[in-house]
Image (cartoon, rainbow, N blue to C red; front, side, top):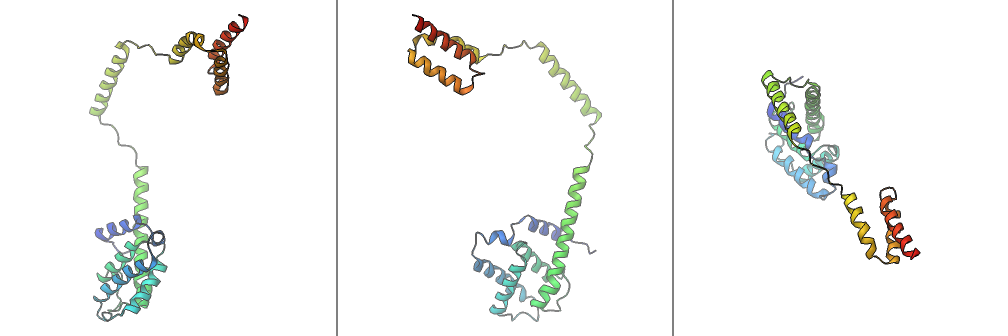
Length: 218
């Protein structure tokens, strides 16, 4: 297995995080993507001694085929592949840059390296997740215990604040407010309380009903 340089490794990791060509084509016209890849090919061809005269038609066909082949990879992958090819990291094309060299030499070599980097990334991530938690130092443990004791003491010394029961306060005010309601309004409010949640508004329903009974008796 060949050693992959740190720079290449980081660049390929960036490719792994980039959207695929299939995803990009949902937002960009295909012809724009072909133009971009074609430009990459033409610029790269100038560095290969037997490919510097590649014409626009050849580059367009190669770009279209690459996009189709790399639809589940990213545009950054194509850029990175040609960069590595120019630097001789994907084997020798013997000075050529054509369909045969690209698809039989550069593409397989690049995808192998990408798979290698992805595998290492997964292994490192699994190692990180499975590493035991770092043990607390004696000093940190001592300070943690001191802080716990201080907080415990504060909880004991601090006088408890009575919890305000807003529901009970509302019920208390309701007993006075029902006297200002008409009989029709009492029936309506009682109906609303029963439809909302009879178990929660049970006391309120009784207050409405008691006022209704009192009115009707009179």
